[in-house]
Length: 620
Picture (cartoon, rainbow, N blue to C red):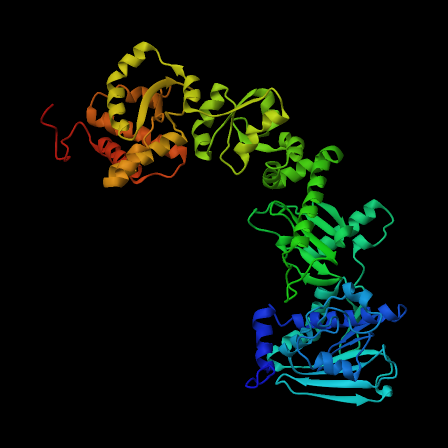
């Protein structure tokens, strides 16, 4: 240090630090009880590391004051000065990372807390904290009392051993009025159960009237059951208690290398893939979070998990998981376990597989796209929307050796009635994952042919009309082609079923892209118009197929008046557009409006009167 330099020590504003904890680090004041339970558990763990037969109990007493008493290792006066009066220092570690106290190094991995700021969380609900402790590591040391205030003041005094007969620590809080709801007896019991239900040491809550309630128990996956059925029933009951639903099935999780055990519960109802499930993650028994979507791969949105782990790292707030290599490896391993359960259902329980797919087929489709083994097992079982209704691909392929797949839902809806009547096997490939999966069917079912639907394929299966009828319709068709041709659409006359369909609009993505390019080029100028013009390609035009079997079309093709023929052609095109259920462009909406008004005007015009309705027409 140079002669002009002066050493200083950082000053800590405790009120500001408490505000930082309560408003930024912790999500809610309720975490104060978690921190107290965590410190108690770590104290007991430390004591049992040097005295394995030492008692391990935690007692929470509610009332005007809140106390948490543990039978842990306790503190000496020197410990209090080092750990309670120094913000950020933890008794579980030193600056070099080694534990203080002989014989405690082996217990380091069993401690929950590591950051040394847990006790400060109590200032969120109290202005005064009293810690009364007696050391088990140094039986000759006197008991010690530390009294801290939220303004940064604290006092320390030693007490005779008789004041604290047994080793351990009691933390006493005097609740602050503005956060009193968090220290009410019922709320304290609920918080203790929420955070500590899986803790390994006995935790009891005592109410002001002397009532006692043990809030933790051994989880069902850790217990021995009299039979597999009894075990399943216990796991199911745990799900109903924690998640409030009866699972479709339970998947036990056991990753010894990661120190993780628990259960994945299969949801009984469908959920959106975007709605990622919140999983309950306990760290050495203490609840870390009940909203941990990062625990499982995104595709596994159909399960909710509860796990207890010793290896995953928490963030500083201890309310979420730290994203590191360990979490990534655990996530992959849990994903493999769930996938193995799913692939095993086909052989072990086909009925359950059917029920699962009925509910969660979207999740299975998402996974099967990238998993060849799962694809082979479940693809034949998956339902798809087809011209034969919602059926499995296995069932559909038996009837239709060649499967045609549409690129969009709109395209399927356009052709489905006509294709079904013509005996074509068409699958709706417009839904998420469906088109990719159908194209992979030949890998699972050799001999099946799959191809994308082309409008010409449908047209080829429609019957040509009699040449005489075609000749009689020539005048109307000429007007219709001229009228509808402005929309890059041809008009043809065919016979097809069902008779109730007057017209069919056959379109494809390339044709729609070309129309969009052409429209943009017409509205642009300069360099942009030249660029769009250079992108022009000879895409097949859309087709408006008029059904000659339909009575309305039979009447329409006899119209000789040009104005009415134009309006009728536009009306037929507009109806076909609506049946396609695709978004309409401004020009198409205008066409529909124009055709409706034109037909309405014609219908209201009585040929027996003048156009203004004033009297008999003078030209007849």
